[in-house]
Amino acid sequence: ARKPLPARLDAVIVGAGFGGLYMLHRLRGLGLSARILEAADGVGGTWYWNRYPGARCDVESMQYSFSFDEALQQDWHWSERFAAQPEILRYANHVADRYDLRRDIHFETRVASARYDEAADRWTVATEAGEVVSARFCIMATGCLSAARLPDIPGIASFGGETYHTGYWPHRKVDFSGKRVAVIGTGSSAIQAIPVIAAEAAQVTVFQRTPNFSIPSRNAPMDAEYEAWWKSDYPAKRRQARLMRTGILYDINPQSAIEVDEATRSAEYERRWANGGTAFMGAYHDLILNKASNDTAAEFVRNKIRSIVKDPETAEALAPKDHPIGTKRICVDTDYYETYNRPNVALVNLRKTPIETITETGIRTSDGTREFDVIVFATGFDAMTGALLKVDFAGRGGRRLSAEWEHGPRSYLGLMVAGFPNMFMITGPGSPSVLSNMIVSVEQHVDWITGLLGHMQDRGLARVEATEQAQEAWVRHGMEVAEKTLYPSAASWYMGANIPGKPRVFMPYIGGVGAYRETCDTIAAEGYRGFALAGETTPAAA
Ligand code: NA7
Image (cartoon, rainbow, N blue to C red):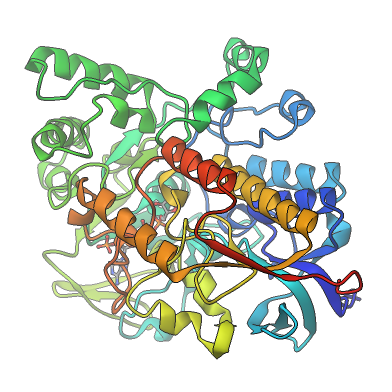
C-alpha cells in the first residue's frame, strides 16, 4: 500500500530525477521536512522514462555525475566513456540508496495543481489521486525534456500494430526481431535508437522531416588512465568545469574559424571528428556566433555524411541545410550514418513526400503506403515549459502560470516567477539548463536554493518572491544575449518551434554556465537583489 502524504510539510519537491534527489538531500541538511512527489514508480526522471534502445548521455560520464560528495565521485565507476541509460539509472538508484532518500519519496504520485495561500504563505499541492498537502515551499524538479509529445498526424490512433514513444518507453525488452519498423523523427533519440533497432529488426524505415547534424561519439569502455586522471583531483576539475560555457570541461579554441586558413581548419575539424562528441563544437569559439564560421563546420559535417552514406540521394537528404550547426541540439551517435548503408534500412524524405495519414497497417505518404508491424515515435518533447504547465499553478491573487507564460516563459534567473512566491524551478526556462551539462546546472540551482532557504531560516522569513522589475530585466537580458548568437535562426525546440502554437521565444539562457553562476552568486551576496523577502515565520508554522 502506498504511504499517505503528510498534511503539512516545509517543502514539496516535484520529481525524483537528479534535481529532486539532490534537493531532498540538501533540505534535510537544513532540518526541513520535505517529500518528493514522483509520477513514476522509481527514481531517475528522464533516465527512468527514456529507456529506448541506444539511449545514452552525450556528456562524458566522468563529468555527467554529482560532485557534491568526494566519496561518491571516488567510489562510483563508470564502465564507458559515455554512459548508457541503464547505467545512469543504476547511478540514480545508488544515489537514492546511499543518502537514504527513498523513505521521503512518494512514487506513483502525480501533482495536478498547486495554489498559493497568501495569508498563510503556503502552497496547497494536490495530486491527481486527490491527496492534498500544505507546504511552505514548492520546488519543481520536473525536468526539461519530460513531457513527451506525439505528433498530430491524422489516423494516429487507428494503427493496429505496436507503437512506442522514445520518451515513454516500456520497462520490458521490446522485441524487434523479424519486424518491419517505422521510426518517425530524426532528433537525438532517433539517431541513437535507429542503429540499434536496425541491427535487430527485419527492416527499418526512417521518416525524416528535418535532418540533424550528428557527430560520432567514439564511445568506448572507460579508459583506466583517464578515469584515474579525473579522480586524481576531481574537485579542481569540477571547479574548472563549472566555469565553462556549457559546464563541461573541454578545450575551446579561442580562435575564429575564419581567421585561420582552410588547411588548418580542416585539420582541426578532422581531429575533433576523430575524438568524437560535442567537443566538436569547441573547434572555434565563434561557431555559434558567426554564420561564415559556422558554415565551415557545417560543410565539413555535410561532407562527412556524403562520404559515409553510399546512396547519394540518401546522403543529400541526411545532410542538414536549413539551420546552422549547433543551433538545434547537436546529436552524438554510434554508427548513425553508416546504418543507412544496411540493406534493411530506408529513408523517407518527408520534405518530398509528406505523411498523409497513419492507417490501420502502416503509414501513407504522398507517394504510397508502407506497411509496418511497429511504429516508433521519436518525436520529442514539449521542452522546458511542458512539464511545469501540466501542473495547474495559481499564484498570488489566483494568477495562473499558463496565463503569465502565454507569450513564452518569463522568470528571474530561471529560478522563480514573479507572482509565485516560494515556488522554485530547478533548471527552469531562463537558466542555462538544456544548453549545459544538466548535472552541473542541477547542483548549482539546488545549492543556490539551499543557500536562500538557509538565509530565510536564519532571519525567520516566510516568503520570497522575484520582483516584476528584476524578472523583466532578466528576460530582456536573456533575449539580448540570445540575439547575439545564431540560435534564434533555427526552428528548434529551444525556440518552442516543435509545438504548433507554442510561442517562439528562446527559452534557455545562453550567457554561459560560468557567467550565470557568477551572476547568481553576486545576487545572493548582495542580499538577494531582485527578490522580495518578507513575512515572519512563527515557530509552529511548519
Ligand atoms: P527532438 O530533437 O525534438 O526530435 C524530434 C524529431 O521528431 C524531429 O526530427 C522532428 O522533426 C520529428 N517530428 C516531430 N513531429 C513530427 C511529425 N509530425 N512528422 C514527422 N516528424 C516529426 O526530440 P528527441 O527526443 O530526439 O531529442 C530531444 C532531446 O533529448 C535531445 O536534444 C537531447 O537533448 C535529449 P522536425 O525537426 O520537427 O522537422
